[in-house]
Length: 56
Image (cartoon, rainbow, N blue to C red; front, side):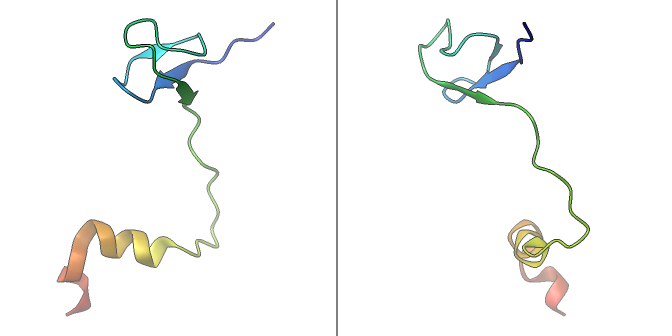
């Protein structure tokens, strides 16, 4: 049986259970999204990160 580590959506602690033992909030998956060389939303992510600095 493989248990994957999860992160609490409320306090950010890591746990193996479905609910956080410290705050009782639901836990979520810690695996990052897959990388794709054809990044359709990269333009918007860079605009949100850097703002209008790159437009000049």
